[in-house]
Image (cartoon, rainbow, N blue to C red):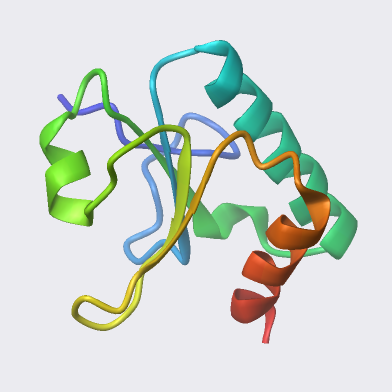
Length: 105
């Protein structure tokens, strides 16, 4: 059984998550990224259910499939190879807000 999970709780991710957070277990940076993302989504009043989480310690092949080379990484899947990535603990509020605005419309 894989470790992909719905970020809001332990239910399976939505069929087509609008955002995917790639983490490495409960590392400090991954924990900060989770908290920063949750805080910003709540502040922007976005649908928190549109986020899936993939733990690359348990699903390392997902990094190759998604083109993720570091964690934490927030991705906004697109058509084909048109996928946007935001790396780091998501502490830069302005950058994170801009990234999330793309899906808010």
